[in-house]
Length: 435
Image (cartoon, rainbow, N blue to C red; front, side):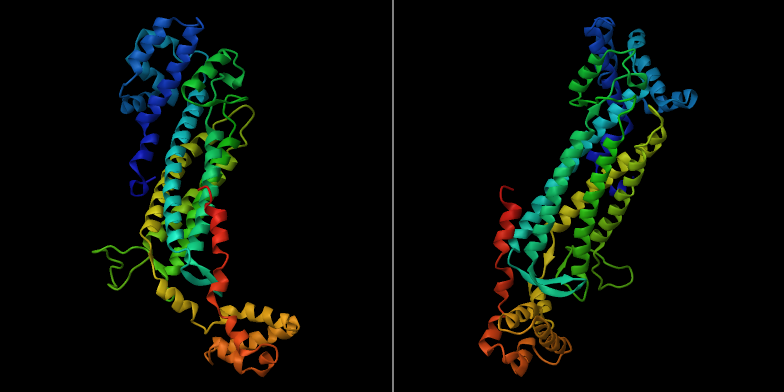
């Protein structure tokens, strides 16, 4: 993670001070549960809270201790004892390091999910606004990058809205799946700690209880979480790629907002480059790069090993921080998108109306022409129009093989643009009803 692609709300979740505060709360809540059960003195639990709550943990001091003991949780506990004093001997009774580390990671990922969902909501709001504003803004649809049939720019935005809505639902599910607590001791058998401690800590941290932790929370949960982030990143890239294509000089149907005083190139003053969506494409690659390591973390040795640890120290902050940044950047692009409806119509008519070829093909078959013959007649005239030899409608009217089946007014009726968008309301109702 670099600060260039980070928002402070998300980075705070992953900073050392926040992590140590969560570690302390896990330990202190566990002490409360043990005190309630009579395992440790109630006074000790109260003193532990008093000694560690609202404390600014000395990160440098913890690092200094870790350099000696070579263990991050022990280093923290040693530093905590410096604040708490004698009652610190009751801290971490029956717990193992993974109880603290894994439960903390669950808290961090759950909190990160909350911020990501806010970013998703901003993207969805921007897409919905653009979709309705351009619901009937007709443009050419493209398949294989080639002119196909008319669509509307609003439908492009509606498709994005539907896709990000699915992504939001997946993220909600992934958030729920990752929000679990494990306080089960070595190899997860509760041999030295009562399960009621885990139940209490989970309740206090608003987490569910992991049914079988085997000392670590099973990593299939994390694999689903990071895979979900990867899919959302791919949705961002799909939308960013569409905008990049639409901004190409030869297309020029939509473009990123270009601010006063902004410069596009150090060498060419005329340039207005799609730098934001290009940046989003790159960020999507980084986020997806976290998915395979998360999948490979699932297969740990026996009840546990720590091969997953170094991976998660990197991918957990990186993936969530980058996706948080990307969502808000994507929302900003959509909110400020410049749409050129006149250019859309110009491009639509670039080849003399050949986008109506399917309508003509179907009309000919309905009038008695075989599909093979109809296809040959339509393609012959469409290729001539594409080659600049006249408008498609005029060429059809002049073709005696075509007029043997279709009268002039029937041909003209096949060039009505409204025909292509007559079901837009139906599609919008499917996408936006109750949203």
